[in-house]
Length: 388
Image (cartoon, rainbow, N blue to C red):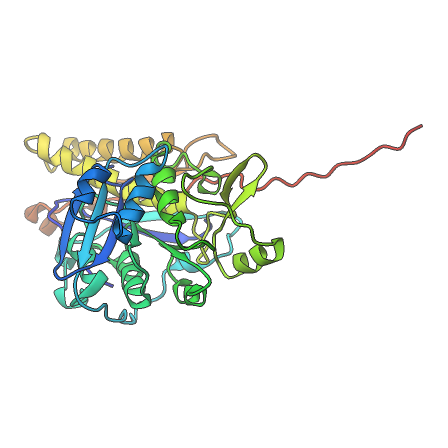
């Protein structure tokens, strides 16, 4: 994992303990190889064309993004330099969210505190390539990563930093990688990454994954979109493959763009690790929103006293963030009680160690929630009555 330092006073770390299932969280980032590392944002295709002409893969992807009916406020271009070293295997246990089979009681996502003292081993960050660029611009104004030009080493390094990066080493952002017949066999190498989604599109001249990232993220509030039914993408042609070919590709973990009913949309919105796009996107919203709201509480209060009143301010901010996530359908509703399925905990004064009080570190703040689900398939049984 790569512990990437961030200038903040609030540290939010998310764990998925029982798997099932803000700013910049709707913007795509195109990673392209260049002579030196750089980050730049473009709000229009004309602005981007000044740096990348119409013959480049960056322009083509950006054009597809801006062509969508619900296009993002900007496209970020991240230039990386040098080769991408292979991810270093970690001795830490594999994330529990890699299980693909949901359990009866569903998923629960928890947040435990991470200490600022944990923050940042520079040696854990790749020395060059996509991993280094992603780490250097990890907290910039983007969410969905994609490569301008596919290269297995670059893709794996990018997937790894997105999976394991951040100040807590638990990942952030989402990686969309498109494959075709020439590189489809590479997709199996990404099966262990819960934040990477692999798409297959026969026509390699069309940027299906880029179109989906643009349209899906910006269609509605985060959490209120089932990505399987993000429909009728512009500049993308539905597959003309046979049903058996599509099923074979699905079994390998690919998401495809097909015609169903009166629309064109996805065969699925889940990766091999068992994660849905909206679940991962919702996790990033919760983390970002909790961090931002708590940071603003510290910034604007003048002084948050380390007493019952101050702890109440922290509790109100945390609960407000979770309530917002619930209203956006990121958090599930209990079938038994009809109430939001989240819990928060701010320690009482008698639970706080004197050393933490003296050092002004509030530890032990926690929350957990169950992500919402969606109807992705409907199974109907019908009977035909005999005429009498």
